[in-house]
Image 1 (cartoon, chains in turn cyan, brown):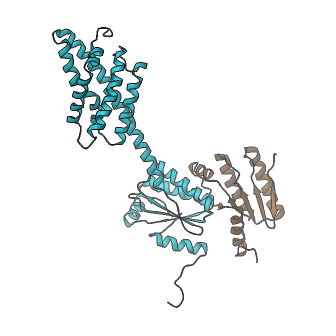
Image 2 (cartoon, chains in turn purple, brown; image 1 turned 180 degrees about the vertical axis):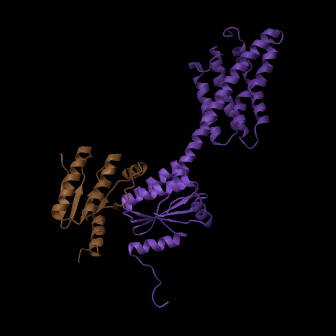
Image 3 (tube, chains in turn orange, yellow; image 1 turned 60 degrees about the vertical axis):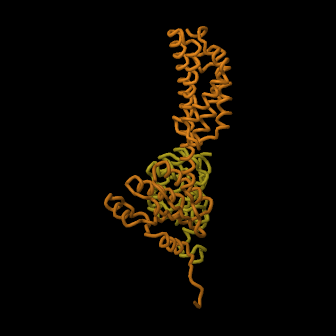
Amino acid sequence: MTRSASRLPDILKQNDADILRDWVKEQLATLRPEAMSESSLREQTQRFFGLLRDAVQSGELGDITGPAWTGVREMLTDLSQSRATFGYTPSETAMFVLSLKQPLFTRLRQDVGRDAEALADEVWTATLLLDKLALFTTEVYQKGREALISRQQHEMLELSTPVVQLWDNVLALPLIGTLDSARTQVVMENLLHKIVDTGAAIAIIDITGVPTVDTLVAQHLLKTVAAARLMGADCIISGIRPQIAQTIVHLGVELASVVTKATLADAFAIALQKTGATIGKPAGR
Amino acid sequence: MDRIPILRMNEFLLVTIQVDMHDRLAMTLQDDLTEQIVRHRARGVLIDISSLEVVDSFIGRMIGNIAAMSRVLDAETVVVGMRPAVAITLVELGLSLPGVRTALSVDKGMDLLRTSFHGTPNGAS
């Protein structure tokens, strides 16, 4: 509809220096001063403006998914992903595009100001276009954030489940944080593989760092213990705090089939005893 | 191969499951094993499942059954070499094989049996 009639391509082409200057000024006003240096912002804006201007020349103002807009889309994707990683807010990211409105509308008014109807049409076209670009930016930003979160979640999962070897044939699994099904699965697999690798006969599961034990967590623990037993390793659960001991009994969780100890030290002593190792002070002291 | 070999080591029997178990094979194994326990008056059975990669509820139950049958015939069963994935599967299936002793390797399983019969892992009674 506005494909041939719009003056937008010409306006962008003729007034590029002015619009660019105003746009940068507009962005500097809205952006936190510590977020980005003026020179890099100017450089970014200039690059994007160039791409936008070229894309607009194609006349495809209604549809930014077309081939003419590939460069613009790529640049916006890069920009919002890097902003997502550096901790910009969504509005700051979207503002990058939206702040172009003011300078652009000013030029439009200067150009077709006499004809109110034409001006309204032009403003509408420009608004549609910029809104689409801003929405696209926000969408990519969101995706970037989600990828970041899921990666961090994954890293946390890896980080939080170390299996350490305390002694010959004795492994310890210090659990920290809440146990959910996904984590238990990782914990269980880590432990079982470590048992195979080291040939350990005893594994101590220390739950000092587990804030709450409900029936689900207890069930997960028992599953881990059962799986380790199937592989031929005995499990000891240690680090049960008084509060947790009370909860376990109140919930009616049956832990009778597992050796439980109050502290890791006690569990370690039992483990050594079972494996036939002894530690003592040297004689004569 | 339609039979799983059962090896005799003094008073113990060693069963190594090297192929994927199917139901017929499992039933044949039950027959053979009980017969061998009686014939050799075996006192312990080692079942090595370190090559077993896939288990279903039937195989899990079968292992439990073999252990129970051996116990009736006064032979102790030790399941050795279970893989982590198999262990997780069995636990998720709700088959934690109560009453079956387990060990990480054939060596350790043998030590376990010797200890429970002779009091020492070396077999010097």
